[in-house]
Length: 120
Image 1 (tube, rainbow, N blue to C red):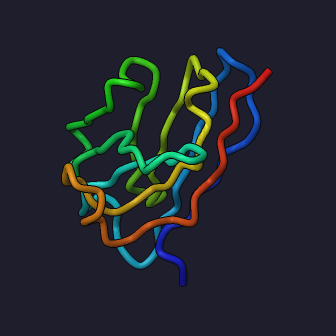
Image 2: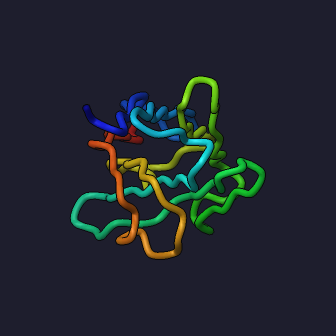
Image 3: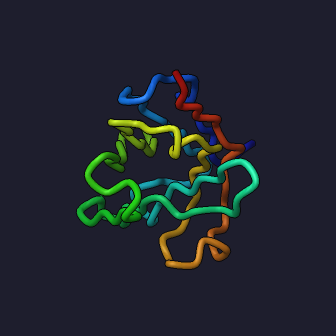
């Protein structure tokens, strides 16, 4: 059983919006810090956002602050990333992961990734 499965990626025009979902199984998202990390073509991974276990503290990379919103629904055991005002620089594979430290290499579960392409 795959612990994390992302969905919601796709092709969107600049200025558009997407909402990514990450369905968890085998553990409860409400008990863990959860994060999103992205990787653009020919670039290294970039931490995007973290929500703490209680869901009351959120953190964002400067590159997405004010445009992206991380949230989770404990009843659905799902993590979300609402992305607004998208730009071509947001094009990347987006991964959800269990963990919340500043070092994403310490995250222990990762999803398979979902592609987001921002292009006209």
